[in-house]
Image (cartoon, rainbow, N blue to C red):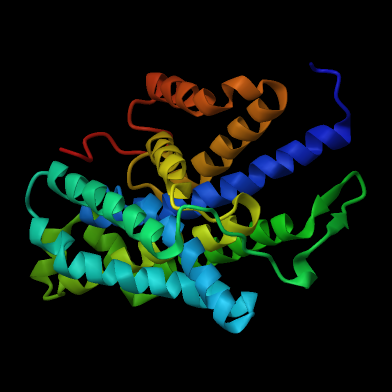
Length: 294
């Protein structure tokens, strides 16, 4: 079982890194929303799925993958704005269970709506020709599109870091996640910040969806497993921690990728085994703060 070539092992490591990038985008969105608003958004997987379907829809109209890559996440983000403004906002100040139950029910509605609109049979989303084929990395050949997923995720992470660390709005978001009462006392309307953050978080889920579409296919249930594994990533990294979401996303991607290579039958459970091990050592996650939910 362990008699493998270096190129085969390297290919699997890169495959795990690509999956980790999808996890990172989903977990960053979840962590942004939870870190500021203490909302566990269980509809995140359905919004991930909508990103892929919206991408197929825009591509069908324009035959332009690049336009789909930009517009589909914006459409999901706009839907996120509507969800926060008219549904989530009514539950602020109540038990964290209330928005969790609301978003869980919303996820079921979105999945059924996708089945009604696009059907139960999965669809395909082809990347542009420039991203087709493989790239020779010297020690192996790896699909160009998957390298593109790694690159665009890295670019998005840099943009998020710059936004949070170098802009006034980012400063307010970070301050609001730590002391919302003080931010309100300074005369800042946090409701607008919550709206923006929810929109950004859901747009990241949409981006993850359209990026995953060419690799995994597009179907109504594609977000079910991903959202569970993404919550595992958030818990392992630490609830509300952005650096934790990045580190844990890459780590969980490698866990899934290498387990699939060496022991495929265990691939679905190893992320939960890894989570259990981490929580035994650090109950609040790798970068989490104790008492965040209190």
